[in-house]
Figure 1 (cartoon, rainbow, N blue to C red):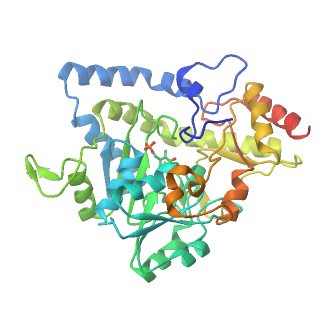
Figure 2: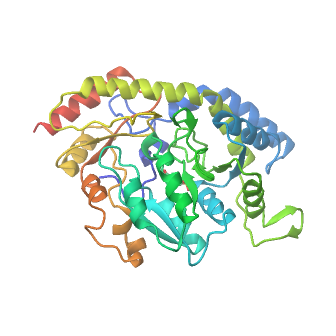
Figure 3: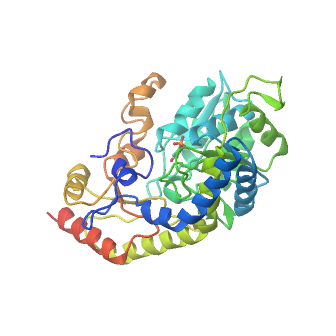
Length: 389
Ligand SMILES: *Cc1c(COP(=O)(O)O)cnc(C)c1O
């Protein structure tokens, strides 16, 4: 089974090994790498020959182009996605004594970023169809200490932010989007990451837009929040050696920016290839007994970061798929409130029944832009064989 420490959407093997003719990894980065190799080599050559490792043209260009790609006012490159969320929270002034509402079904980093500021993550259950944060559950989780609602655009979908906005307004909270799994996803034509007050995203290698290591960004239309994030990520200073706030160091490396610039040019196309692959799974799996397929919510254009089906007896199904060379994963096997790291929040099993029920049934099938029809046919054959045993 997938180790719990696995990051979203990628297995260790996918990072380190070329797939054999028979194996189909959860994510295959090699084909992406081949497409950008020439451009990356040229960009890296430039950086090394100029020894321009921090900041510089590649970083500025990426920030401008990614902001434009999403129609966001600002993009501030940072060290990774978890930092991006934490910096977004800090820029909004959130810290000790504050509560931030997040979905119970998410990657652990969403909760970590909140705890790292001193604030408290307050969990809300998800809806059973899309497994996205449920606005009704958010409404009941609001208290006098609620300072932010943090929807997670999970699996490449966009959460129902327009239903959260009135709730946030009713209690004076901000909306901070976790857009790590939704680079290019839209809801009613607007990009995930531009629907709230501020957003954090991750360019971990297995995300739809992935670097060659860790990287992330904060997005916002608010000039002041953008200035705060930039300052906090650069030792609390706007001009060298003038430190206005307690900050830290979280920068987007020039080397990562080179890779991201090359991949950003192809992101829309790669997202389209993912949509085609998702449509092919749907065509092949519709009507198969024992497999519940993911749905796209009305108004959403999903980018299929993960293709998550639901099955009975999931652990056996995953084990058997893995044993036959199919890189099936689980996102996520242990809900935040049932992890040891967040035991101190005081939740117990049964508190978030939809999330807990889904955690025992969800299974991510291999999906990446360059997956072939033959590979998908093999995944489907194996899945049908294993499920119908
Ligand atoms: C990947 C991810 C993050 C964290 O990003 P890192 O770059 O790994 O720190 C946060 N939230 C979600 C939903 C993610 O999938």
